[in-house]
Length: 351
Image (cartoon, rainbow, N blue to C red):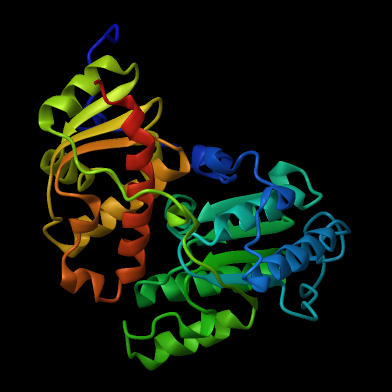
């Protein structure tokens, strides 16, 4: 048995300084060791091999001087030098085709000091702007060689305008961009908002990227068994007490707690946790709660934290209305990732 009882995520109220948000803009632990040569392209999907070739060349091309003319910002120029061509690549593809693996490989392969490269999710980028302010974020990232943005999905017009403006300013500063998503830049927002201003912002943003399609099926389900069925409350609790560093929470209570913690702190919420054990998992009651759960699922997946649960299977978390709505890509991603973490948790269960 573990020396002490399990922790409770609901008892944690992390405070994260802005400096930590910047310092943590690196590939998550799950992708520490990935490289282009560890990516396993599907022979039946030539676009996967093509992506490796294109991205390898893109990384090599970032090895020279900063695009603004030097390795540092051009303080005395009247106007930053415009980029002659799109200063970014956009990896478009379905769930689990290895987009984040390739994005992290690009970060690792770019010949620049880690302090001159940034890697984060779209949510983490908007959180950074919220913590630092727009101008300070431009100054902080403007001297970088590369900014990688994972899970680039625009869910409201405000975020669209914010990120479009930010990336435009960074491109002017000479920062190269790379992003992943499940939708091409020019099609983000379709079926969500009809506002002409929103679509205009999307089109302007797409001009910064060269789209690179990656076809294939979700590797998390290739040749793998179905997700394990939920366990009993007793099994979950027993495993939590037997696993050093595990947490144990009632799922409805955890959802309520997430509403009191800013999503930028969900990574810190899981600091030191080796396994998340949840009892009484049930359907998520509303969209706001569902979106917070998506962010938590992303942070747990990034950190490779197994998730053991009782209640309903993870593919029953979101209603049909949610899965058919504008945020469906986020929900399917969360189901895919939680299913993978549930498989990882299965060996922990006490027999």
